Amino acid sequence: PDARPSLCASKTGTTSRLHNHLAIMSNAFAALPAVLHPKEEDIQMMLSARVQDGTRNSDSGMEEYIWRRRKDGLHILNIGKTWEKIMLAARVIVAIENPEDVVAISARPWGMRAVLKFAHYTGAQSIAGRFTPGTFTNQITKQFREPRLLIVTDPRTDSQAVRESSYVNIPVIAFCDSDSPLQHVDIAIPANNKGKHSIGLIYWLLAREVLRLRGSVSRTSDWDVPVDLFFHRDIEELKKTEEEQAAKMEEQAAPAPVYDEAIPDVAAGFSGVVPPAEEAEPVPVAAGGQEWAAAGESTPAAAAAEQW
Image 1: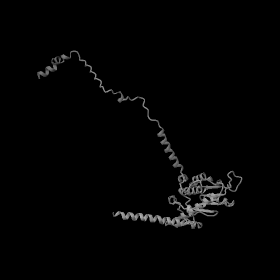
Image 2: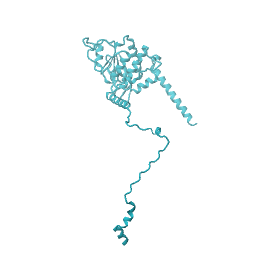
Image 3: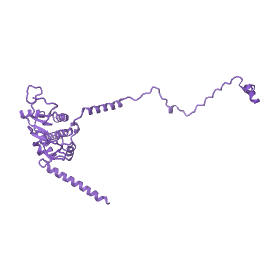
Image 4: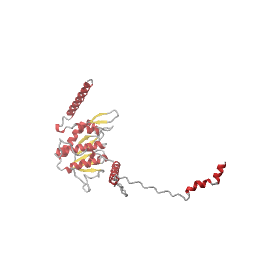
């Protein structure tokens, strides 16, 4: 009975904290319609992927997206503005009629897989790896493209693509960290662009929102594509997993051992009748065996023993 008041108090405390959290979330996203508000699962995924982690340095243009600075000097980004910019970027992407006019670029290895998956599910084009200079400006090159929208993983690493987009008036959506330059960037999504989980999650959220706005994915049900597909995978880890899977397949495919000699079925062959024991053969007796005792008495050793 003494524990019941404490349990009730703990339950009321958790519910009050949950209501306060929801109230804070509603105030943070008051500019967005209720349909575009994030769920608690989305915020938890962003926190677990360390989307809010910035760097020790900061750019003057990113000050409005920085929430605070920790004691160790690391800047913390505002997740609320990250979500708002993701919604804005998705609406801009959907406004383009032809999905192939959108190009996603990532020269950083952590974002190559995410860029390819984003292009696969949204119908956009992707450039994973080194960006060839002149892709947007030189019409002689084989890789010449004329996109209407550019999505950049890191404006510093992909600076060549951002610079060429300014020459041909292509709007740019960029994932910007606390120290990222905002020159020639039209929509900056404040996020950690140096972690593979953060980059993959942002591309996954952006692709999901694009498909929701297009009507191909329902908002009431979860997207059937897991976020793990957008994460970068190391080649060494893939080789280890492939070797382990191959070893398991070999063990499963190995044939069972076959014995050449047939083992008789004792239970089937036993009839319940015990066969009679065979009679032992008589041991042959040497000739004159009955006279050994008599012959032994006449030996000189026996006579000497009697005299002693």
